[in-house]
Image (cartoon, rainbow over all chains, first blue to last red; front, side, top):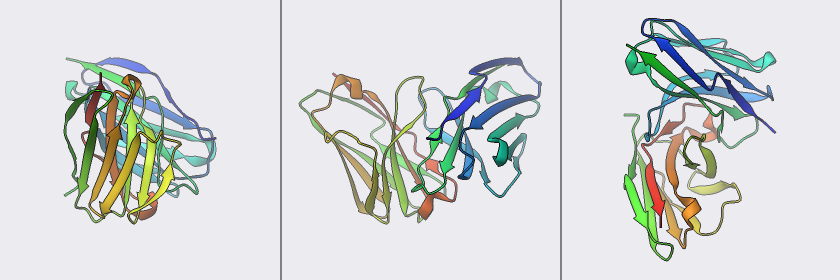
Length: 113
Length: 113
């Protein structure tokens, strides 16, 4: 059974710092991995999607990497801003699935001005 | 347009009520999903529709009844719910097979009294 773990559970940094969020999964047979952002009481906003054949994806200040063989992904946020404060969720689409995602518990990020 | 809309935003219902949640997307996606998210927990899959047919039911109690009347709409009919069903209900859509990005709506916050 696929399990997704995110470390740390919470992170507080001063504005301007670069930071890394970690995601690990137990079964390397995945189609893709997706990073989301969720603000309190809101829906999920897709940040980056990495297909299983890809190593990384970039969007603005965000860079996500994928090492499928070791079951790891990282989300790198450059020059963090208070507006980046949110919960970041990692989700994998298991191989052979109908498209459903398996989520980690998330990392709650707080960027202090 | 990458928007998934959900109505209502908030819903309060008694245990004897019947209500429906609605979800709509106009991205031409043929896979649609219902997730349930309890406070401080990650989303958990409830149902997957593929080409308007139910393809996954994650052992959800029958008091939740999904419906996909056409390729753009997804409903979740609620009847005789329990207080523990109070949660954020999220709808999502993606290309068939889930190989692409999964886009989420803002959710419906449900409170069962």
